[in-house]
Image (cartoon, helix red, strand yellow):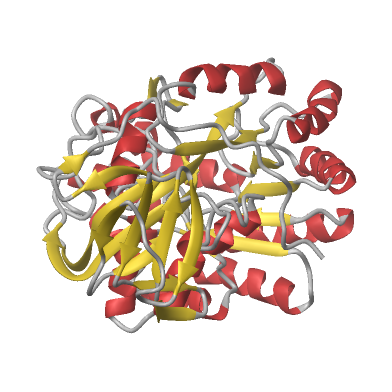
Length: 460
């Protein structure tokens, strides 16, 4: 059976064009001028956008953290992603100290296999740098995992020293992999947090006050210099601060292979949310923390100039009840993470509505660039003959109000509760199968396949 999507505007990084799209099985068979293609079935996309499915390159399903774990399983999290127009996630396999990278990868495969509504890949978190893990990085690349995340934060858990980062970057340069960096000065932050607690400052807003933007900027600059010394590609994850963005922009202007992502929470939320009374601020605890609103204009500008290349979510949901509440009396014990995988496409479309981004840039940051950045293009990230039929039909005139009562993520609050936005997903196809329609979720949590990825396609 073939399916013809007709009457819509096909959106690519270069803009929107009226065109019909023919789907045959799991792939796109043709893109043609209106009225030139025929199919066995027809989906009317008149008045709507036809987009390549969104790619969220930063999620944490079932992630262990601080004695608990994020509450979205691969099943619930990928279903919620599909509702929001995301058809691919790249999650993080988390190496525990004392374990191997390959055994970690096997463990995450076991979690995800047969439990995903959409396609998925993995990055590898390297938290234990030693001879074995350095050797296993090459084996991971062979297994379709060519990106490795490290932390300059969380001493005693994920933290790596500059020397360990140097070794991993040298290996990445050798094998063509990309180092992803959580860039905050964790040693200094822990001192500030201990001082705040000792002074009796225990509320959630202290999470932001003890992780100042200067320490994100410093760590970002340090990571960039280590990457320059080693020749390693570097991808800064969840960039939140103007100081960090300035360091990235300078490196990119000099031709260094430095890339960065930001997240919707840094574009829309602020430290004022962290300061909400009655422990409500705990809902907004993530790292890096929400910043003063003044940073938001810089981040939107960074998206327009491509100093910020990608928008991901860092989706890491913890329920307010029983999980976030673990930090009552000590802000340091609040699990770090904000839910968002379902709303990324909508929130960035709201940026189009507000004039912050063009239509093309919306699709570029949410789909095309992450596909290229993480070795999935042109299988993913584009509406073109031969590509996977991961297609979102998006109604730009529909309105909705974001709320925990209506979202599909397995978490008991929304970080965007009550936010009115314009634009809404109408229909979603994952490899040619309609998984979301106006009638609801029509997919299956066994539909998604593991994606063995090639290396970063932007490398000089």
